[in-house]
Image (cartoon, rainbow over all chains, first blue to last red; front, top):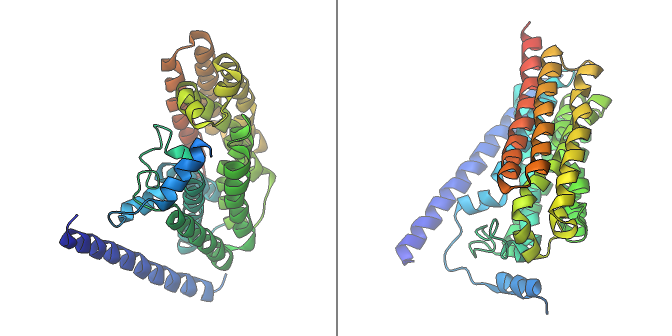
Length: 39
Length: 306
């Protein structure tokens, strides 16, 4: 595997992990809103 | 040094030639198993008394999925040596050298802790404890203790796969009830004939890896008898939701027909003694569980609308 391919693969992986983390931030935001609005 | 310990050593020291893809990490979560777990968990939530905000319901399902997947990743870490021997599993990320065993362990452990903590904080502690028990049962009881020691491995270990509807129920109601235990019992009784049907044509693979599945230890004939026995025992368990009143006539009727076909399939496996009927029963057993829970889900949706 060339260095360029390796970098490209790592960059794709980082974008996906970043997307998952962002989705978790959004989820935690909504969980907080729901929990704070009470039962 | 045994064959498996040599393989384990090779796997743990194998240098990664290229970075693992996200898909490899996803494969560690056993997505096919996860889909059934999510579905049965969803049905547990749907039939439970009470309601849950959609955001929290999604969170509970996510925790069940991630928790189940995480235990699968730890299972792959522990079983990397035998996975490398078996045809069915040798392409998994660890034996194929795409992810190291230690990475899989760290990944599985982190996700296990995160899913249980999130379930406890966002949903309730009963569901979180049940999720923790499920993960611990699958990792310590099934994977580490039973799988390589006894042909009853999947009978007792099947409990791990039976917990999700109970967790779903607990997420909504906050408790453990007879009804949720019945949902547990259905999957618990379904697991042995499901896996033994598979092992009837994968027994050489299991024998090669030294896993004492029933056909390896007791032979195919004894396994076929057990498949019939468990499918008969499964029958009354599946119609209990109707008699307990948390499923309607449609479910009662559907479960009777589906379970009758299951027993007939098991008898066919016993009578014909060929690979084809075992494969057929294995495929049907997946459809069977899906349809049973789909009817339960359908009935509860209709009940909610009407």
